[in-house]
Length: 73
Image (cartoon, rainbow, N blue to C red):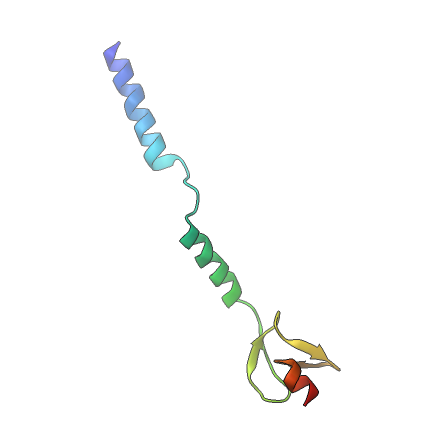
């Protein structure tokens, strides 16, 4: 009987500490977001020439701008 309890305890220990997937920590989930963001396309501002992420760029008349100042100027 003690052998079976010992075997079950060892199996549970191995499962719990090595096999069971642990949730991502806060830092790991932030690193994933950074990796996704780094892969975003960069576009050049039509006025000043700096590069801006596609999600932050302003599209006007088929041209991309980095800010409202460049768009108006």
